[in-house]
Image (tube, rainbow, N blue to C red; front, top):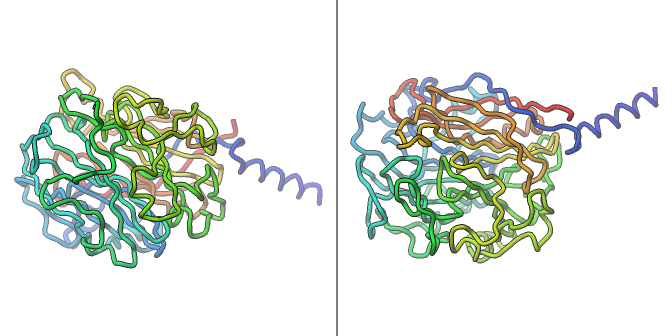
Length: 439
């Protein structure tokens, strides 16, 4: 009997190592559309729901492109003349499964209000202009929320629009963060840009297909681990999160200029010690320039901010590289088997010549790896022909149940049409089963 127990324990130890079980894909359960579930009492039109499990136990999400109505407000007219391009903060409370947490979405708090009228264009003209603000990755680190905040001109083909300035804004959760003035730094009112953003337009930018100048480390999204990044317990679902030197650094992936249909993604890191003073100083950021699959803890594999001063970057390693099929990405560590998962969205119509504004057809490309430096392996594609779901973001709190066998994600969908009931341009909660196999 003792021999059998010993063998069983040895098998379990092997099964949970990073070398035994590889992620082979995901299976999606029944997707819950927020408006269908809650209208007319509650109503949300928005997208890009990057989420973080904060130190106070709540899940927060940064969102943008809000079409007039937020939770508890009146729905927009059938054909709105414009939309509120503010960034809003959502707090999600309750417990899983889906219906419990999605049904308790609290009222959203606009961090910044900028109104954009449909049909405006911007080719980099002096401010104020029709540029709008976008919220990308949101992360709670040691009790403070850090959100990537970018300025995007609206015009041309949506998928090649210009994310050309990016800044991290922060707010101590105890402030509270439902007051916009507690976020810092906020840009000037209207559509004026930051005076000195952390990631300005490079001196030699990339020029997009529709003529915009593109940055390098744009549409950044933090790498997700557990509660309060990895500062509260260091575990998720009972499994250790202490990997890839993440007790010292916070990581983010940034693209070469696109939210969608970009070509390369780069890995950046910043020391956690020092809090906002350190994290919001571009001089403290480094970019991975070592070999694919290289040691993430080797300092010589990391290079200085000068890498982002021109395009192409001088020496930075593109850990994801596929022409016009990468961009803004959600990355989550799954500790039960020691693997990472990443999902990119691209629009097939945008890669046609000329590009077509056809947002209801999207493709997800799903990658996995055993370390942030890769190699990242594409394991699955999912086509959404009508729903057009895009930029799914994982909810770390949901993965705490079993450490990465199951979880949930938030995503918006087809934004050609907004409506109070049933349309996909709202928050959609997606139950996920992570599939593993012994290679």
